[in-house]
Length: 288
Image (cartoon, rainbow, N blue to C red; front, side, top):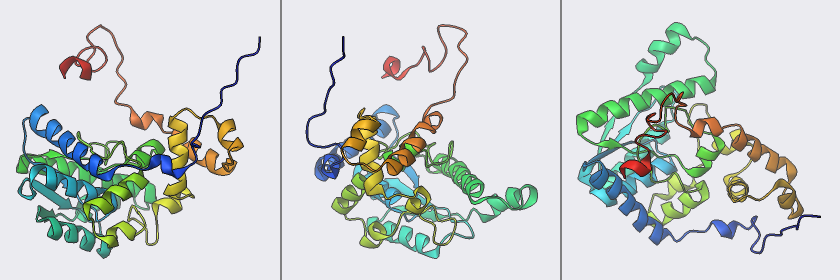
C-alpha cells in the first residue's frame, strides 16, 4: 500500500515574509527574558558584554541598557592589532548613545604571546579562534571584577551554520539573540535605534581587510535564513527544489548545518550512573 504524499500549505517556506517579526513584542519579551535570567534566576543585577562594533553586540547592548539601566551594563572593546579602527569607533558610538560603562582592552599581546612564540604563520581561522577565546577569558574575568554576568551575542543563523568559536563567543551563559535569525536581528536593530552606520555595514569577523561573513559563506543572509528556516521546520530538499530553490545554495547551507551539530551540544559525558550531571541530575527541568 502506497504511503500518502503530504504537501505543505501556503505560504511557501521560501517566502521571506515568513521570517518577519513584531519588533516591539520581541523587544518586550527579550527585556523580560534578560531580567528573569539575570535577576530572578541568578540573583544578579549587572551584566557585561563584548562590544565589537558589529550589529549583534550593538543590539544586545541596547537590550541590556533597557533591561538593567545603562549604569548596570559594562561593555568591553577588545581589539587585536589588525582590527579595523572603524569597528572600535562604532563600538564607542554605541557606548556614547547608551551611556553605558565601557573599557578598551587590547588583546594583541595576549594573542601574540602564544601565536608569535609557538605558532608562527597561523591561518586566519585559527587566529580568529584564538582571538575569540582570549576575549572570552577577559570577559569572564572582568565579569568577576564588575560583579556582572556575561551576555552572549550570537544569532540563530551563525549558531545553525556553526559560524562561531566553540568555547569562545558561544560561552556566555545568557544569550538574548540565539533564537533570532540574522535578518530578524536587523529588524530589531532598526526598531531599537541602533545607528545606521552599524546596521548598513557588511557583517565581518574583522580579521582580514575586506573579509565579510557573507563572503565566507558564498551566499547572503537573506537567502541563508530562508533556507535555514525551511530546514529546521522539516522541509525536504526535494520539496524545496520543486518550489524553485537553487540546489547549489541548498547544498551549501545544508552542508554547514549538518556538519556542525557537534558545536551546538555541551560536553558529552560517559554516563556510569543514574545521576550523571546534566544527563539525569540537574537537568534544566529539575531545577527550574
